[in-house]
Image: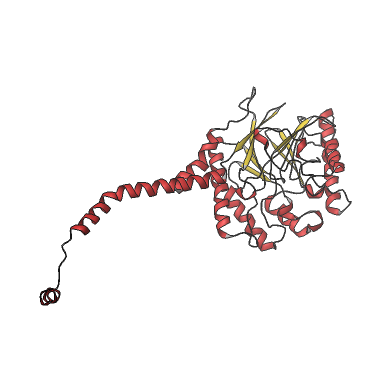
Length: 369
């Protein structure tokens, strides 16, 4: 039974998805975007829950990498479920488990991660020690630039966008201003003695954990790929908790002028079109784990010099897999009963034809009676 479920989880949805391609070239960059793996911890994680959900993510991830061969994979925060509570030892235990599941330590494809609120805590609960642990272990600071195939990505820690003047936020805002200066000089082609990581100039792709400011998911394009039937799409978002504030959003868009934005956090998919201050699509990625919803997904993006094309890969629903196990188990039981029916009939026949013997004392009693 397990082999049937394993085959479905690993291959069935992956054969149905294709890399998005409109006039694409072999040199175009192909990446995965995954969010909210929420590896369970010691406080709230039951061992059976860990086994089931982490097995699903492990098999799905490695099967997708094997069949689709992305150049890079980006994890958009909330790698762990209890990272904000752990000490130094616990943090590295969670990080080791992430490495074992997703092959972070030097294996292909190249993997990049950014922090979510479950990794560091929300803004007022963040410890400088935990920020330092995350930076050293995953080589990811609060504002990070990654360039792959001349395509620039800016990885941002959303909790550093509170805009309250704290040191954590101040350092991030200073780094963003420095990136804005680099982008400006690269666009003008006049950097002088300065060096820019954005040459040749291309608008960067912004990756973060929180969505940009929006009132609720009613602002999203409703289609089959992005949770068209989501019953929670009218629930209002709380700025700085469920999304960035409007002020932080305008700051980022004005300074960085991204050509696409990818994020997670909400455990539901969203696709939103922005027209000002610049035009781009924002994609919110659904959770990769069954624990946060029945239908996990991840995104495939093909990035060319001028365009960003995106497809959604829908992994099997947990309820579907459970039903498959029940059906398979029922079929196996029926098959075993049919195979054993001749043996059962033979045993019953022997039992009916087995001669009964009376003891001599019983015969004597019958005669004397």
